[in-house]
Length: 122
Image (cartoon, rainbow, N blue to C red):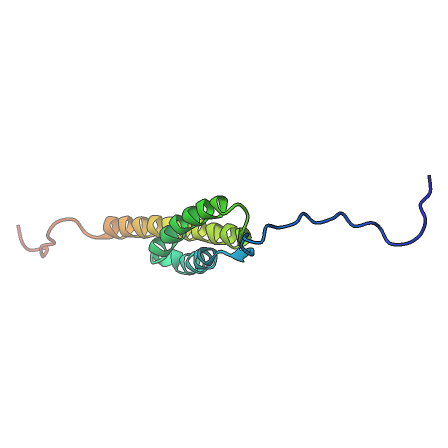
C-alpha cells in the first residue's frame, strides 16, 4: 500500500473547556529545587539538613497539589531534581556526622587518661 506525498494528517486536538485554567508551573517546584540545591551544597557541613528536610516536605505537598489539579500544574522535572538534591544533601550530612564522630573518637583515644603526675611523685 502506498500513500500519496504530502502532509501527514494531524490528529485533532481535544477542545478545552473555556473555564479550564492554562497549564502553569508549580511555584513549589522551583522552591523545592532551590532548597534541594542549598541542602546538597551545605550538606557536608551538616547545615544542609534543614533545607533538605523542608525541600522534601514541600515536594510532597507539590506532588499532592499537582495530582489534584488534573495536569494543569507542571514542574515535575524540577520536583524530581530537587528531591534528588535534597536526598544527596541528607546523605552528605550523614557522612559528615560519621566522619566527625570517628575523628572525635580517635582524638579521644589518643588523649592521656587520668591525671599525669611528674616522675618523682609517688
